[in-house]
Length: 235
Image 1 (cartoon, rainbow, N blue to C red):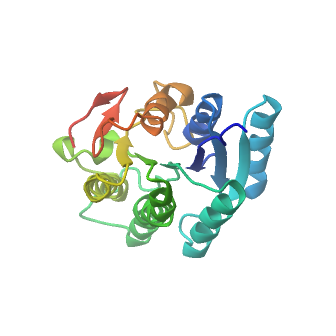
Image 2 (tube, one colour; image 1 turned 30 degrees about the vertical axis):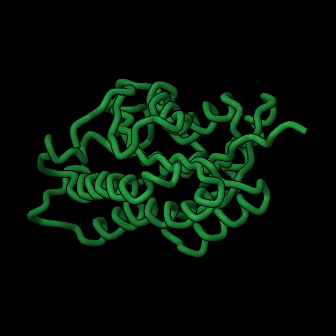
Image 3 (tube, rainbow, N blue to C red; image 1 turned 135 degrees about the horizontal axis):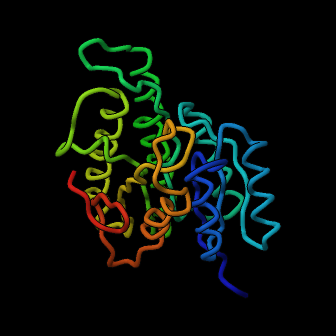
C-alpha cells in the first residue's frame, strides 16, 4: 500500500497567490486543502485541480473566527489523518495611505484580526497535529512593508500586522526547533493580485515559488527566517 501524501492547508486559496501555492504543492505530490471564506469558491478551484489529476479538496475557513479555524483543522485531520503543511496566506490591505498619526482604529483592528491573529489561530490549531507526526512546515506570507529595517510611513495597520507576523514567525520557530517543525516567512513582492492596487511586477505563480520551496524544505532546512525569491531578507 502506498503511503498517503502529505497534506497542506492553504488559507485564502481561492485566488491569487494562495491558489498558485495550492496548485504548486499539489503538482509536487501533496494533497492541497484549499481554504477560503467561501466554500463554493474554494470547491470550484479544487475541482479544477482534481480535473488535472491532482490531489485537492476544499474547506470553508474564516481566519477571524476561532470556531471556523478549529473546525477546518479538525475536518482536515479527520478526513486525511494528518496535517503537515500550513500556508498562512489569507490577508487584507485596507488602509493604503493611512498615517499612524491619524489612525482609523476600525481598519487597524480588522487588519490585525486577519493578518496577525488569523494566522496565529491557524498556527495554534495546526501545531498539535504536526507534533503527532514529528513533522511540519509553516509558511507565513508577509510583505516587504513589514520589514523593520526599511519601515516607513503610511499603510500603518498593514505594516504593523506584517511586522508582527514576522515576530510570530521567529517566536514559533524558536519554540518548535526541536519538534521537526520549520517555520518561515515569505514576501511575495509586488504581485498581480487584488491587493496590489495595480502596482505589480510579478505573477502569482512567480510569487508562489518561494512559499512552495519553504513548504517542502528538507528536515535540515532553515527555520525562523524571512525570504524573497529564495534569498534571505532582513527583518
